[in-house]
Image (cartoon, rainbow, N blue to C red; front, side, top):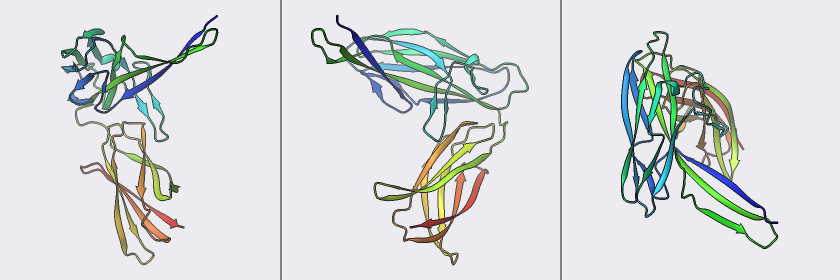
Length: 267
């Protein structure tokens, strides 16, 4: 008796890409500043550049991420700062024919609650519902047949900022020097412990024991939602062995700049 098993590989795209010729036109983050009681209407445009008609499902999801690489796509409204219950989508499924475009319409209706403050967010998921390719890995008479189906879906982040409310605060978490493939990195985790989302740039200023600056070493600019955290790796491979003072700076591009000092020993 043959048995058929399928392994589903789910790939969620948070940057520009396309699955099977279907792509999202425009950015994958839609941000709006609103006040309690406000309403905003927008649309997400999809384009099928392939040769096959595709059906796609449209649904809501919460989204949290952490410095250790964990991503949580939770049930709508399961997180404290979810705006999923404010969000209405139409349609919930559509068909996109080759070389055509289609639109997903969304409405954000902020409750008339004067206690709301800071940033609220969720995701609109765009996922293929049919025409998913299947690759057979084994097919022998009387033997187990194994197949692989790869589903690629988009996550469009819908962000609502309640006016200019909410505190902007961060917390420096774990830090350490690591060796990776013969290179030396200063690794540090940063958490958003405030109520507003941040999009800061991180850099490290390195000083020798005499207080002379050795250099400024740039990290990436990474978005951090409240309660979430990110990991930065700063390349220090070219720094000679020795003891140093490190000033870590997190600059949000406004009046909010955060810093911390550490002792580093490069061996």
